[in-house]
Structures are given as C-alpha cells and as structure tokens.
Image 1 (cartoon, rainbow, N blue to C red):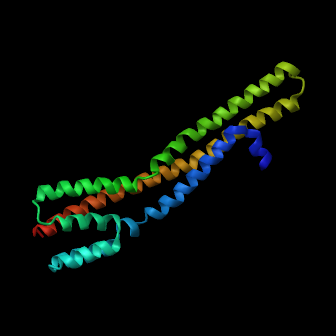
Image 2 (cartoon, rainbow, N blue to C red; image 1 turned 90 degrees about the vertical axis):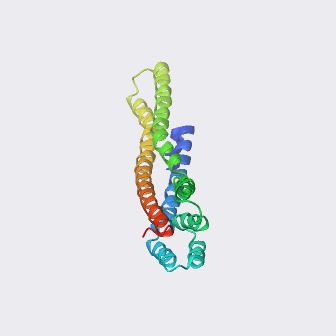
Image 3 (cartoon, helix red, strand yellow; image 1 turned 90 degrees about the horizontal axis):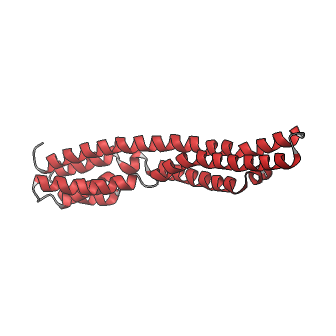
Length: 201
C-alpha cells in the first residue's frame, strides 16, 4: 500500500489529503444536519402550544433551552413580536439566511473536492506518462514489462482520484438536497409562527 502511494508521487499525497478532508466533512455534516438538531417537530409543537396558551415567556425559555436552527428563528420572532407583520417577516428572512448559511457550511468544499479530484488524478497520470515516454526515448520500446509497469503506475492516480470524487459527489448532492428540504420546512414553520403571533390562527 505504501509503495502504491509512493508511485503516485506528490499528486497522490494531495489526493489522500482531499480524501481525509472529504471524510471529515461527510461525518461532520451527517451529524450536524440531523432533523433533531435542525428541525425537531416535537420542540416546535411545544413552543407553538405555549404561544397559543399565552405563555410567551415559557416559549422564549423553550427556544433558549433547545438551541436548534428552528428554535433560534422562533426566538427572534418572539423577541420581535411587537413589530408589524412585514417588519417581522424581514427580520425572520435575515435570521433565516444566517441559519441556512450555517446549514450549508463546508458543503461547498465537498463539491470542490468532488470536482478537482478526477482532475488531480488525471494530472498525476499525465505526469506519469511523461516519465514513461522519457524512459522509452532512452531505452526504446523493447522492454514491454518496463513499459507496462510504468503505464500501470501512471494510472494509479486516476483510479484514486475517481475513488475520492465519486463518494464526495454523492455526499455533496445528498447534503444539498437535505438542506433544501430543511429550508422549505423552516419557511413554512416560520410563516405559520408569524400568523400565530399576529393572532390570525
């Protein structure tokens, strides 16, 4: 395995670094984008019940205790409950953008790794092929074993680049879709909460 890595040269080490970074982001985002951390339905229902019962201070306390993306948005709504409806919507849109940026954190890096890994693998292969042809120009094409071995080494980085890129791309798309679903649900809950605070429901 160590020889396999050494054969790829500097590019192989860069690809290994990308793979470690991608795995770290995948584990971190998998943990951070759980529904219980972003949009816990039970907590939202408790906060809404407290508001409907007129216990605004209890609802604020619940928001502080939970400390999820949705509870932070609802806390801002409760803190600004005296403002006009259009103003509250603007405030919630602003805090919503901040929370979405927090949800999307590191996902772009994962997409970048998925994009550059195959290119890095190809670069490693091209460098390897240049070395192979340099050997051919000196020793000729008589030694087929040496030639085949050189080409095989050159292709190692392409294989590793694709191995890194495929899971990174799948994870990137999955996290992107998950965040988009959360954004839609957060908007729905926020609008409903504005209506609750303004006594329209």
